[in-house]
Image (cartoon, rainbow, N blue to C red; front, side, top):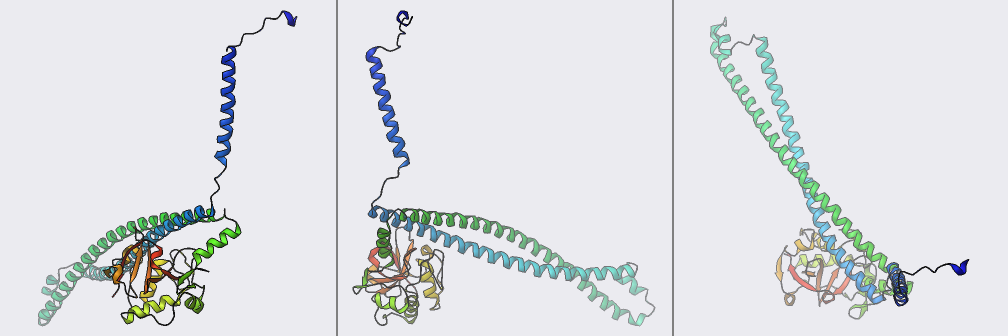
Length: 361
């Protein structure tokens, strides 16, 4: 019976069928290629990884300085709020004392039948004491009026303090929200950098870590930067005291010098770790000078100087966003806290894009 069946007609002709089959095979091959490429991450060379990690660390430092600025504002708002609350508590205590005084007067008036003091004096059985008691009553009335005025003043002051406290609390919450955003940004950038570094082999990563930590690289005087204490001091090319234009600048440099080899930790201000602006702030604080917390505020904390006018102790800033700072020590060198994985060290100021300098007085 199969021989008598009529063949079913294909909806496509011979050439059309062949064309459709070819397109289907090509589409399947293309889909396979794209599917594979969608899941396979491109292999980066060590140089490409280094470039990306360097960029991420620089972006993390920008976010770190924003975090530092948000933290400074949050701390200031919190301190102001605490002061307002303390003042409100003191005023409330004074208000309660004044109210107690008014309550005593009211009680005394109730016990005396609520008579006006002048009427009570007019009815006294001892006219010789009238004038004396009148004077006392007048003073009592004045004290009562003063107490009422005091109560009104304290109430007004407390209302004003409450309004200021509410405003400060709103500011604090805004700064804390900004703090959380900047913290997340920093951690995100650092997490991306760690993920990229994890792609490197152990040998490649060791070479990268050596390049950023200063181990084996020449910074000054043809020597490599060490890792701790006097070893870092000697290896970094600092030999003998640095000649500074003032005793304060000398002290700031001496302090920074003693921090060589300590780790970079974002948001840290010492004594065991620093970020870049935390180090310069701590160095100048040791010399009795209070610098603001962030790079973009420290650059306005003194007299601007050109690169050709640099002197030891000056603050040197880098990148267009003023996101990095170091302490100049002369000879084209600075002490700075570079970034995670790179301890406080001496480095040439031309290793980053120079943005400006400030002389602290």
